[in-house]
Image 1 (cartoon, helix red, strand yellow):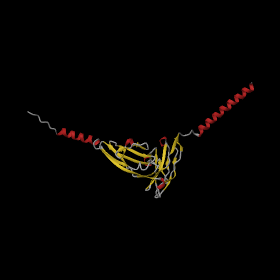
Image 2: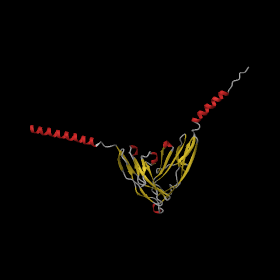
Image 3: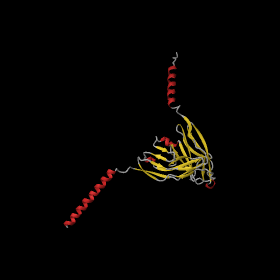
Image 4: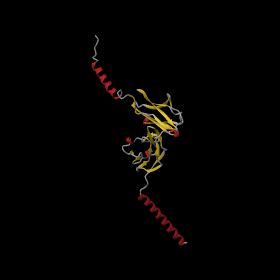
Length: 259
């Protein structure tokens, strides 16, 4: 006589086990989505452009750049990754026309899918720039600041319409919104860094852009050094040094008198 086994409780258990496990893993898997989309750009011959691209997803996507369906490969074209590879900046310098005028594809890929965003680059010769093309009137200069002090990198630009100013540090975009108020871009365009840290040290570029195109300033280095000794310690050290010198001189004079 066959024994019938009630599989209802067993199936119920496996169903809920799968449901809870999948809630913590299956639902988390998502195809890539762009959070920073590269825009079409117009640069000046001999200048610089940077295309910024970033994506999110689970697992974390890898972002890379293609040109005509193949990975970008040139001494003048550099890819700088950030966000553990989920973001990448395509930097071209110096711009060469018509060689660099092309469509560039940002590709974000993970196990759940792949997405692409294409941006085009146009280049204009310096002597053919349209009226109102951005101009950097004052760029950042080399600066040395003590740690915890405020550093201000200056920038002023003009153009028609008035250009928007942004900043790059070590070829990556500066994002004041992620600094918890420590880094601010002033209305003048200057970048103000409060409570400077060693991580703020680097090469800064001011970028002016409007409908006519984009212009980069010359880069300028910011150096952050350790705090100086307090005035008390310096004065105390100096006082001890002078006291030692005076004692040494006095002893030397006494010896000469004895001789």
